[in-house]
Image 1: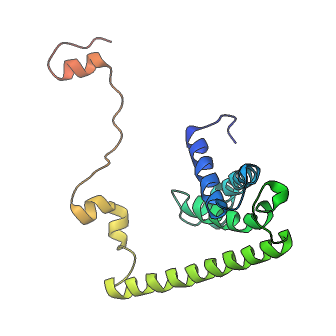
Image 2: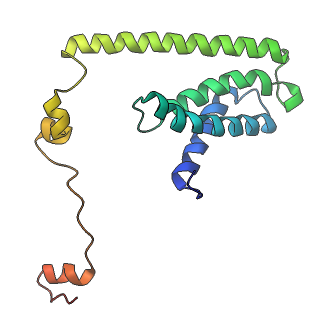
Amino acid sequence: ERGKTSLLGICTGSIAGLAAVTPAAGSVGPLGALLIGACSGVICRVFSTTVKEKFGYDDSLDVFGVHGVGGFLGTILLGVFGNPMFGGFLTTSIVAQTSIQTFAAVTTAAYTAVASYLCLKVVGVITGGIRVPEEGEDLGLDEWCHGEICYGPAVPSMSSMEIDAMMGGGTATA
């Protein structure tokens, strides 16, 4: 995207691969695991950037794009890469196993969405809502909830001579 590899991108891609291969770990061989990881790296990247930006959902740590999509994808791809043709250990045909895996992934996602929504509603009823007042959003939660500022404005960088002068150990020269 920017022409350079980033450490954050490498770490996120690694986590996406691990999240995707986990459902298949006991049923795929090394080739299947590598292919699942490669597929998930690409698809999770798209979900963590393009899809998130298009729909505007709040996922600052890319949990849905990496863990959710990666796990969902890995569950389905087990049906393909668990086949002996890719070094896997399943005896069911690719079509039959992929159908089973897709049903399981979709059912689990639907159950999770409904259960999460219900939990959110119950918490909202118990606590009187799930958002802080607008004042809390404007002020910042650290100050609004706890009366302290944890992340102040950025301090311009100072040279060691300037710091030494400020502390009374000498004079700074320009």
